[in-house]
Length: 182
Image 1 (cartoon, rainbow, N blue to C red):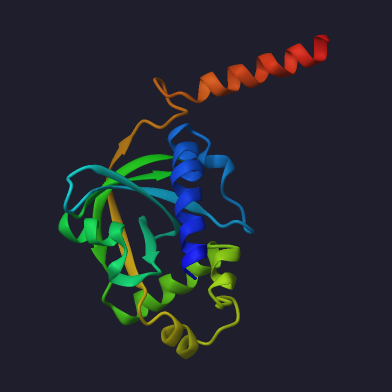
Image 2: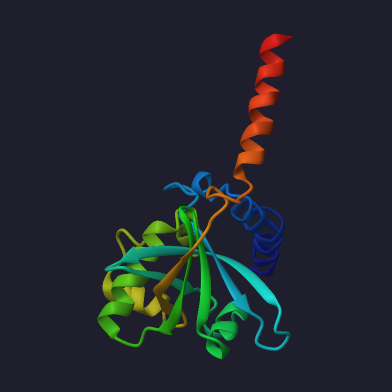
């Protein structure tokens, strides 16, 4: 399991986070790989900006994510120290306040939905969120922490004015044009 965690850490740091910051978030999510957003937190010890890609669900105007590693996840510790957060969704960036869910029904429903949205990741963890019973899900998800983010503002994304997606699209257009003319 440590090798898998190391692999995800490398992929997240060098692929997922740069892709989202560059505006490629809309191309990253699908039912197989899962639907992903990036949390932008402040380090609880360092005070530095930290990024964490996570699976998510949107329900009743709030954004939900889950810490599969429980309360030991670094990004969860960061949120516990400072609940103000920015979230880079595939469609744009929002700010909000994060809350740990304690209501049993809300927690169970959102664990199931987030795991359904996670694509192959939940299956790799041995959970089929589509067929598992509520009791089985509570047992397997005992250490999982569900976070609700209540949005309070919108930020410009990479596709908005001042963003950098136009640069990548322009480069891609030029490359395609060169290949067509050759």
